[in-house]
Length: 135
Image 1: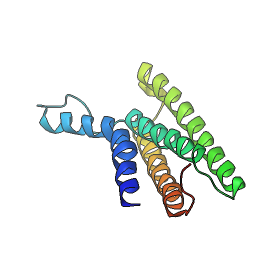
Image 2: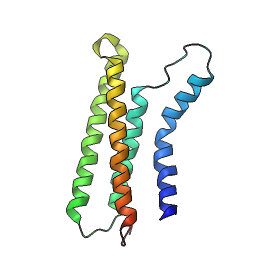
Image 3: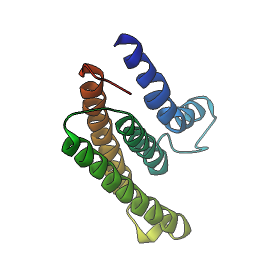
Image 4: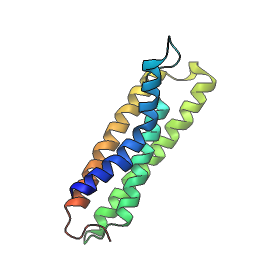
């Protein structure tokens, strides 16, 4: 089980955090205001990685409780739809920054990403604690 947790952390969470961590690193080493330390689009990417991973993990999870799997997949699809809409709004905001409140959007998407991380953690915990596990 410890190996599964390490793999989940490395393959899902850390890979999903690459855009956020890369931007933060560039911000730390760059001179002046080259770019903002955080961007909403990076959190969108993180959330998408988490939910796509959820769907993939659940696809390979053999469980007696099929309805739980269906609900979790449905929740992940809903989150993916939210992230897609927010990404489209962010693209519009890049074209005309007066159309959206960038700071509010950053906070909203970051909060959504934290919720996604917690949801992914609960799904992963249930899968790794199951005696059947993956098939």
